[in-house]
Length: 228
Image 1 (cartoon, rainbow, N blue to C red):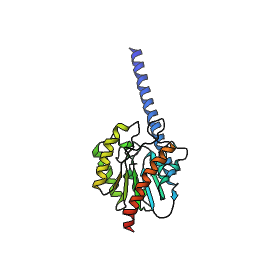
Image 2 (image 1 turned 30 degrees about the horizontal axis):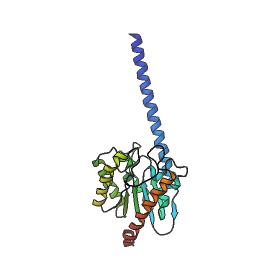
Image 3 (image 1 turned 90 degrees about the horizontal axis):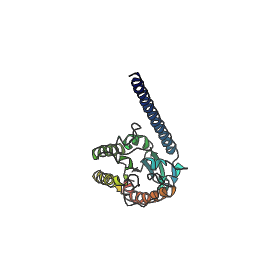
Image 4 (image 1 turned 90 degrees about the vertical axis):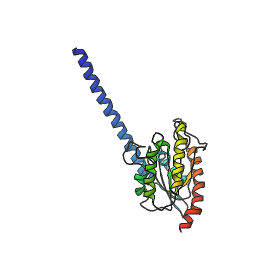
């Protein structure tokens, strides 16, 4: 009996230790993501005069797993490009477990210095969120952006989460249409991914950026020009 009680006690202690270790590791990851987000925000891409583009996005925007995060896909957009990317975040409030880091939560900070165009990129981290959660997060983002033109870039078919992409893409496309935003679907984009099946290679970032840049030019020519 004593042996059984000792084993149970040891099991309880081990469970708490594993829980604490897991929570500590997750907290450290969130800290790394926050530091990387701040670093990327301090390194704008200056690709010519005129339009100030503000990108709000996830790890793709932040440049996670790149040796040079400042060369993540927004580096290929025209104009002065300010990037607010946070790995693991998305449109919905609970896409990330790192606190209030959804696109809507970060929009006021990202737009503090103004913008001619907002590019909201994401959706892969909303793969397990409900339509209602994505909708609420999108509406909050729209309110935070205000009357600044917005281009929404949907999730690409990353192998790790590819089977969820079509659903999220459809939800985001419908929301963009309802709220007067331009939508760029990436479901058919043929991109290069790292071995994790989720993040882009440097070449994949270039491909992704070139696709978005073409839409940015169109939006700038139509919507942004009309506001000036």
